[in-house]
Image 1 (cartoon, rainbow, N blue to C red):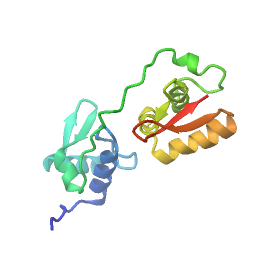
Image 2 (cartoon, rainbow, N blue to C red):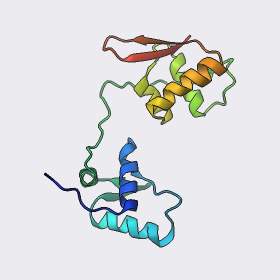
Image 3 (cartoon, rainbow, N blue to C red):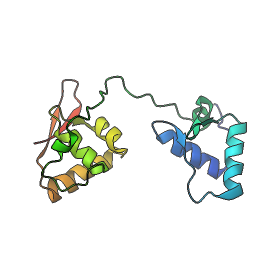
Image 4 (spheres, rainbow, N blue to C red):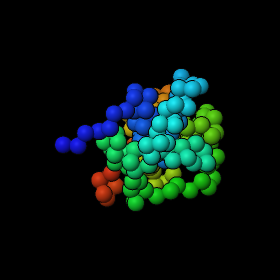
Length: 161
């Protein structure tokens, strides 16, 4: 049985939260300040668990192994969504353009709809948050008719009619 390396609570927090992000960026919390922040980041750099990047630090493959996880690979079948005529998709809905809720509505109003994964990538939300926003905000508060269907591969596809 492999034993995981000993991590301080701050190191474990940084690595685990960065591993949840699709890009693997390390973003220290605001509560970790001053020399404590420097000490934690320096220790992670010395162990080879993070690499400097232009926008901060990124996780390495060794860091995923250190916390007992594997690097997530985005599925190949996720198709990027077109950004054409996005404001037309928001027509008649009282939502601020550029917000995450606007991204959710624009994705749902496209003719092909959107899968749960596409909605998660568009908003940065977790699956339960996406479903809650569809149920609570879009259906109940805004009165949108959001339907759920299944595509050929069995994935759930949401559409706003």
